[in-house]
Length: 431
Ligand code: UD1
Image 1 (cartoon, rainbow, N blue to C red):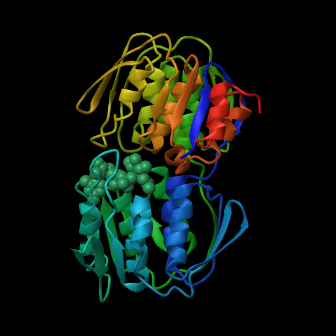
Image 2 (image 1 turned 120 degrees about the vertical axis):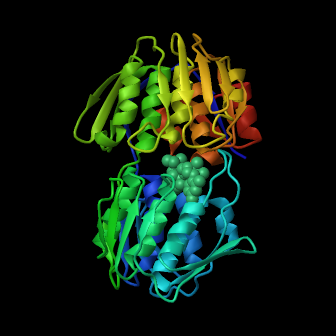
């Protein structure tokens, strides 16, 4: 198990370039199997989640070639099964996008149910409701979602709650249904729009993505395409929050500033200076931060995937801040670790009451999930002394070269395997 060893206190100064959006990539790599033509996808982030999804589709006969690190060519002409192996499903929840993709393509899919998750209950009832509305017979048997239809027919679907996953899954299946589908109360996240654009580039007819109502006119077949994934809103936001907590002056390149507005607004409110360029943002923070209130909401609200990172910054802001988690029911697990670093935070149900402290102090901590792991790294970068964040694998699910990128802008962070590397760092032996 690898760990990050961090010596805190350095400001973050320089430039960092953001990769393709992990959550868009997961939907797009799944949707790419809906045609038998080759599909070329650029700006695919090299993170564990996307690698696992690619392995899962290789397991059903999709040929993957990678002419460059971030470019994937997928050829699904020899796809030979609609059953996804449990091994992959256990590792990433987003394998369930293969239900929508396979149901659209072959009118049947059998995919093991996603396992438990560290951030709370994550229902799938809206996905199932959508598939049923399109005419599929959906059963949960032996731990699998089994969906089958003679024919998928367009339908008018009202989601009971806003769900990114259900919107994407149903949009994929409906793209190859006969007739017209209307999805009401759809999620509006940038990656929902990216997936719709991707499907449209394959010949689908989807309108309204990015609004509450998505209209899909089913087509008979999808064709190959050449597509580049949007930049990652959350990766960019994580570096922005890191500057707020650690101080510094960072230009964050390859972003869509519009997607970052919800984060920009909060960071400006607490005292950071933010300048937007066409495809970059500059964050400057040298003054003490001030408190605020944050509530996570579906897009364009403040993203739940940025909640731990902003909480870490607010833990160092003067005054009392309140962070309310509006999406998941168990997303404050990391707070115990932050308190061990000196933070003053009380969690009541879905609300964290934060009394700002002047500094964190380093210690050994454990990352409980992907975004909390990144947030705890930020806390370590801001802290006095040495912090060891156990288990880098969570962070590597969603951040490419996190330690390298941070080192390039002045952070003192190394990744070490258990054993000699770790001992060396403890003994402070020069490499
Ligand atoms: C996606 C993102 C995740 C992000 C989340 C919210 C991907 C791969 N993951 O997850 O990073 O944190 O959006 O922005 O894109 N719900 C139900 N029934 C359903 C579906 C969802 O009750 O059928 C609930 C969930 O339990 C949760 C809320 O709705 O409380 C939002 O979930 P959803 O938007 O579906 O999140 P994911 O797609 O799983």
